Length: 380
Image (cartoon, rainbow, N blue to C red; front, side, top):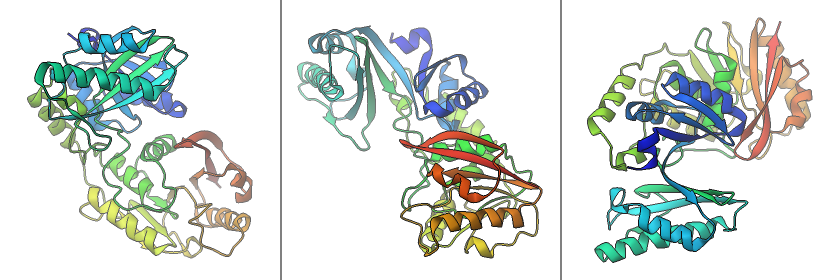
């Protein structure tokens, strides 16, 4: 038996800045005995819960199933242990493909890439010796992704049960410059507390990430609804019927929403076209309303909440100085959002003061590796 089978313990990789939110989500999906660690959360789960988390979780990057863990003071011992202690045919066929993600710190093996190479050598030699043919290494769309983590000379070899980063929802087929991470958008919606009580509007919708994530939340659409395969399908104890049961139960919870409860606009025609294309992949009935419009021309007839990420760099196609533009955004909020609120993500936190409104709260959130701020404005 492998380690995950004995302990029922997995590791969810999550952005450090939303770890507490992700832990709450994991528990809501059935995870037990959660324990926070750096950029991750350990948790216990049965197979059904593992499948449910991979299919539904919006705030995690991937779930790792540890196969073995061992003291590792040299690359030779890494090779020897990987060669002798794992039945690689449990996960791979000789004509399969795999990819290794490695992370090494504070250990005698100094380089992550070299550690990955030695693990690859062990797998290749294992298959060559046993079957006369070895699986191939493939970075994109590999059959299985393996994770090697070595810290303080302690190694863990795991299978990525998600089959690649869960932030790739499958709806972003068109994009704009500097798009927002899907996980970040989901976290912002969670932090906003919005659950459809009032319509949500994004006046700088870009390629529609916030709109898509909002739609998936309000309709109970699983985050991985469009995903075609998962890494857990290659585990030796994979249960096809149980997976179909989990997927069916999750899909039955999907509900319809009225048209216009989620809407957005952008001054860029290419952004609007991208947003319409992306949203159509999850919103087949066209419930999300998207139009080309300058935010200065927007008039709200009913109370709304704004969740948005205004452009501040390449996509800012305007002759208006950026400081003046953000002042106009603040004026727009004061004019159209009385009795409501705006949640604004600032990729450039130096622009927060330019809005001209007093924030209700600020929270550090990262978009990829770039630090930004989520700011809430209550408009009275």
